[in-house]
Image (tube, rainbow, N blue to C red; front, top):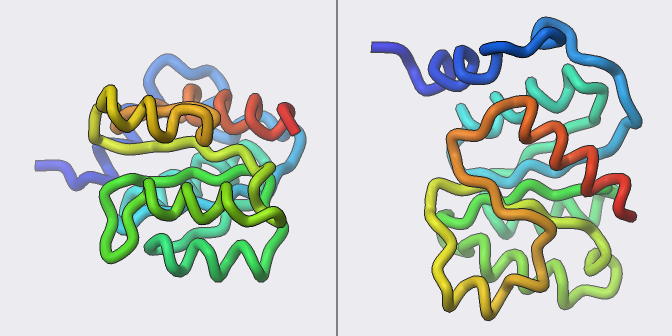
Length: 148
């Protein structure tokens, strides 16, 4: 049985002509927040191949610390994390004047519920469901970075 990393790598390389190296585009610093190190590493590889500078954080608390240390252009944020979940992390990011303008892309395996959309829908840039293709992830990150 293939590992999770092998699964994502196979999924991302299907029918993508620039899948080996990617095209260097406008470089952005992207903070990847996910408690699964395999997924964080795969996203890091995807984004680095596109010319972005990826930084990883294993949970919401570490995310907030990294945002004090680095100037990030885009944040990829998982929802199901402990002890601080993605919604609480998103709220703290948006309530901080220094980070409130950073586009946040929610990337999760959890479908968006109506109540969550009503509560948080204006706070995030885009909501992506895992597994996500490399091309889709990179396009959304590029779009979010250009929205600044």
